[in-house]
Image (cartoon, rainbow, N blue to C red; front, side, top):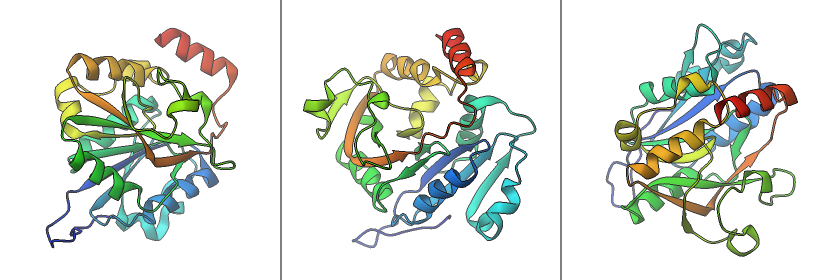
Length: 234
């Protein structure tokens, strides 16, 4: 959906670009899209990058296509290339990245993202809180912050990590640091970007009030694939 919303004072709201890389996630992706279109923040654009999934995505999007910018890559170029294609197409100054097996836990997520950036001019990246859709609790696998989750899970704090598939960044971060490193294809691309973000003096904030559900689709998550790409990229 592309629109121009207004705040309580009647001022035009800044545009948020929601970028979703897609590769053969089927029904799980429906949960992702549903949560995006339920967002109360109207000034948004939705960019879906189909990484040559060849599973009929365009026809399945159907009537929603006018509200979605669909980018179809001619081959599977990996997660990094898909995110970069979304960045190139984005018109917003705030870029929100969610993977195709991730959904927003609340229809107020985008509004809260914008409010948080407005309140923290010094912050350039928001690390969203990744939860299990069945229990609602934080997925420990995605807690890579250097603080114990038992004590800090519900606290807002400055951190040195964010998950590339559940994050919000000011566009200037990419303009200063460069984009995702495409030769990685998949695995460790977030860690690489984080190093550059910190080297450029940008600050990252963990925001427990902005929650997403990770449906953790196992499509493509074979043990061999995981070990190969993560080992190679690290």
